[in-house]
Amino acid sequence: MEAPVPDDDALWNAESEDEWSREFVALHGPDDSPMPSVNTLYAHFVSHDLETETLPPTSLRLLLHPLQVSICQHRQTLDCLAERGHWDAGHLAQARLTENAGFLEKWLKLCRRSQQAYNDERHRHTTSANLIMYHLISLNAVTSFHAIEKYARGALRLGSYHEGPWLASRAISVGEKALYHCGQVYRHLRAIPENARPAWWPGAVYRASLIAWATSKALGNTSSPPIRAETPAIQRVIQLDHSTEEESLIIRQLKRADVNAVFTDRAENKLSLQDPISALRHGRDLLYGADKTRLVEAINLKLHAFIERAIRSTS
Image (tube, rainbow, N blue to C red; front, side):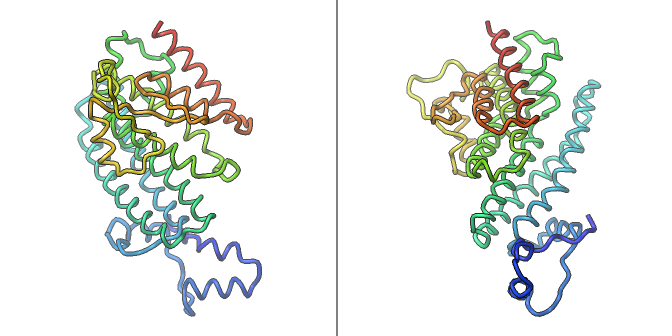
């Protein structure tokens, strides 16, 4: 955290000493001012000192790191308390998650403002990757991936009647938010060509697929309007992985009984989340054709196993 923030990418990509000097003066002026540390940058961020600033995508990514660490720490605290049966003892950790969610919203505003200043193709891809990270971290704030994955593996012995209430109370605190963030992970992933995607992108698909599947089951089994079986004959379709509307508006729409939430596969077919297994199939579809790395093969095997288990449980 005390290391200096890396300077702008233009300096790293300079092809000559003269080009580096010109870029440095353009960025910093004639004075050689040192870059702040990550700790200093984060202190300015939480103190509201960056509200009118623009930051390069690399600095924005570094700001996500302490937020991710804090959210993971408090999520793990809640998971440990829940596994020991202390359901009501996590008020402080939950309050910290809510506080960090506010900082995430502030980060998003800063990112959107900075996008206008860093809008070339290279920076756009970096920004899209940053936004995927932002939505994954936001998912950590409203879901317990540890509990969801444990449930998906069949490590819990719950009757089908108890699955929805257990998921809704133990693993997913705000289902509509979870579906929104899953859709946005996919949207920003689509904005990056496959040859420019970060090495970890299959892991993002895995987490979003599993969370969307569990959330669809939780909302369906608790008769939440958007996913329940008894829906009106005429429905409004909302493509979660294409929508650019504000989070609050999408969440309000997902609460409506006449809304059908869908993802879109590679062939542009709409996959309704009224069938939770569609969320897992969608993740597998996104990985189709990806380089056969060990990570991709491992995730494909897991998703296939989860799909088979889900089919058997409904038959």
